Image (cartoon, rainbow, N blue to C red; front, side, top):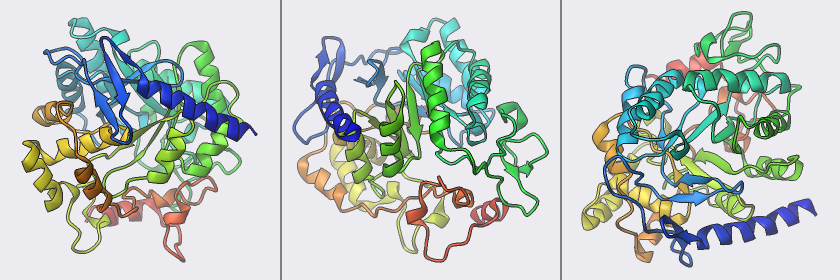
Length: 400
């Protein structure tokens, strides 16, 4: 019964969210055409992306800057460029190894008067090593220290599986992101056989309930989840105590459109957010032989030429017209600026149908060395007879 009630609540909430348009901006939904925007500022140093209202009443920009795989020494400048270009949403995580640079850049922009803290939406994530109830708050407090903030707007369970993890003590950003034996400080502990350590007795709801407590403390504005499959999303919806998830962040792009789980989110009041929204050009080994990289797809190039836009802009607009949000990553100021400049055009019904033909329902990010844990989310995508590989061997193969 609770699942049915949540679904009804979600449908009513999403209908209200996309029907509301404030005088200063916002979003509205037009039949099946996705998100329509108006009223957003185009002036320098002002927010360029409209916002969507989350289940907790907070406003989240529909496009944010992703920082996964942004190298140290360049992440801070990327965040500064993004905020100056009008971004007001920054997505980060302690296992990215660059969260302190994100914090330095945010502080600089606030100190310089470019933006106020209350104008920003900052999202961070709970790492897999810290799913135990007593380890969740230390994880967040270390992140707040790195970000130089008093609270975050969204705190997501990064992955449902407590792997890599030992369950013995929290592992924080200062412990490093290089895989090491479990008796050494690291966010990626290894067993003696080279496999990731797993906390088999920990379930993701323990972590989620602890995040709900942090919402009550005022350290977190919204509880969220990431890399969860549809069954796991339903499990959260059926077992949360007080605060339902406001965001689900999963891989999504035209080659992997996630139609089923987007529907689950829409029917339950969760805003779907795409990571790797422009595909994964840095994972050539993940593509099938002869498969073109997403941004080089001639069908998308034809649309981009007709629109006078880049392929990346057309793909991001496709996300908006589907009614979902995105966090594209870039460290190049010009691309950061163009990635948010997608609100002066829409895609036609025929163009949206062309995107339907691109879907291959195949994810690029599997992170299969963590499939030892029973809460690993992508088991249905593993090939028949798959045997979990050592993470260092997988990394070596991927680097070739």
